[in-house]
Image (tube, rainbow over all chains, first blue to last red; front, side, top):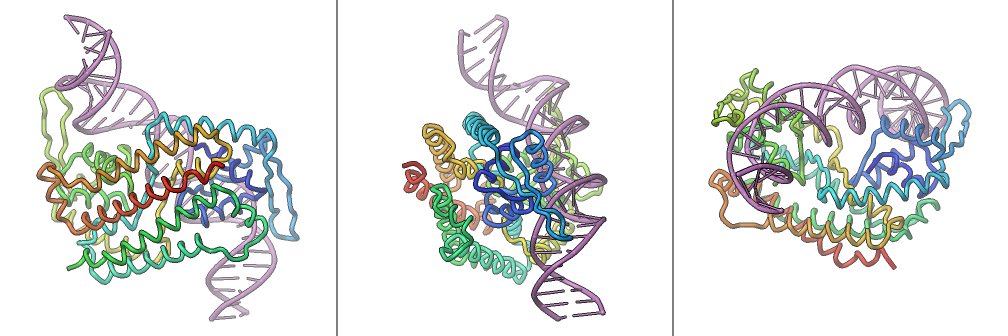
Length: 183
Length: 183
DNA sequence: AAGTATCTATATCAGGTTGATATATATAAT
DNA sequence: ATTATATATATCAACCTGATATAGATACTT
């Protein structure tokens, strides 16, 4: 998916700054997709100069200006149109898998060359990480209003459920089978 | 993990050409990690000029030479040493998650802007892909000798089991809950 | 029998992305 | 008082990817 379409899509969920978009990629989206500042900021500037988003500068005393972007009608139309062609391209290409780089997996793959202590630490930290992530996906307590609206979105519900199930399964498998890597 | 360490690690499983390493990334490794030709070939050349791998040219009549690389003792030592520092860095960094770019996830996230037919096709193709992958991970029939040796590796058994469980869970969830995205 | 497509096999490179760094201030912790 | 962390935007070298070039073998199709 083009970075423009992705940024427009995120802005369609509500007005946000570049910094806040990055926070989404580092938080709830981190297990699915990510973009760096070096991509986000130029993309937003480009979208703005083509009138796909509008920008309100929130001047804060002696802090750098906070630029909050809002998607325009023109931007929403472009997003919908691009999304459709992206989906068509996804089908056409035949690449239905995800692009993944897993450091953890590589460490497991070559684990016979690692001391047992190191392998244990890697496993412990990974399981801890997965459990934290699971809690975040399952969390149903109070959150800021603008995020609460997202909770009711069908796609968000579906994704949270999928992520929870997968993380639970992953944790269970690792805890049950990690001993197999030693012995 | 450095590309050198990764290539050495794969060559530690048996001698291979650059093309064959790429095939591993497109096949069984595709859901965990990948490198492109533009990275693999220069890396192998670099490893060779530093004597971490040796190279045997298999001249085939009028086909381009096939360069089969074998890890050296020096290379194995470098690999083990790098692996240890990579594991330490994994712990130190605090980044226990994987780097993921999932086109499928983005299409689901923005699925309310997609026509139902398109969403159905995306879902059908994705489930089909997951089922094929699952079969590959579970497959226990005859395979070439050099691959059969890998089957007995503890790490491979662990990973195949993990992948099978996760794919099964993913397929089950999508089939049971995909209707929630419409309505 | 000729033509098309796909597979093996290596190599290079433009273009795009990342990860690091720079800048500036506020706040929390030590 | 100092250090570390968080907010906030921007830029850029270094690196990686995806595309393209080359070249012959094999498979299939009309």
